[in-house]
Image 1 (tube, rainbow, N blue to C red):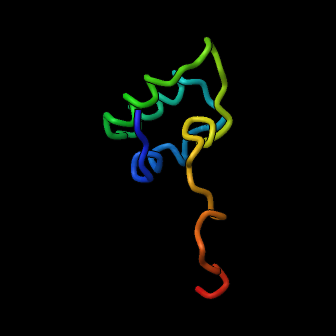
Image 2 (image 1 turned 135 degrees about the horizontal axis):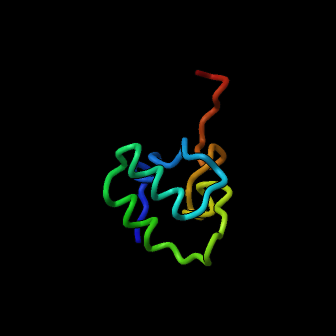
Length: 74
């Protein structure tokens, strides 16, 4: 399983919180690349586990704090 910013961006608007099956269904309905669906299928989850955000799916997902720019300047 591998994630990139481009792949993870397909889950930004997902209906959080969601189960693994709901995320897979959302990805299929929105036309996400097959790699997103494959990554979601590889998630280790217990039946009915709820994912609260993209960080639960990809712990290394960068947040705004990870970027070094001042939004006030733009």
